[in-house]
Length: 70
Image 1 (cartoon, rainbow, N blue to C red):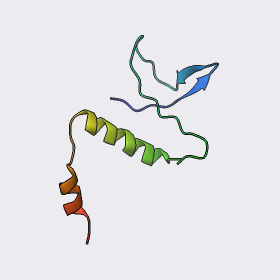
Image 2: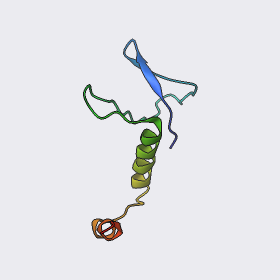
Image 3: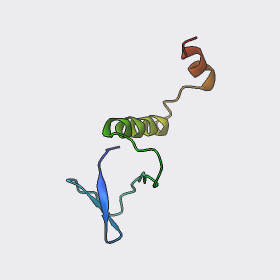
């Protein structure tokens, strides 16, 4: 998985500085007006977390709770 950015131009997504093969499947995160805005670093962390989940690299709920400071 690669992380890249683009913008919508005339209803089409234009990827900046990278070419994708025809028919490639892409994931698009679209911020809604009034929604949370992520910094570039936070967006990269979110996309990495999604990739980890796609690879089944998950932590179950009880483990997360054990890691929380008391």
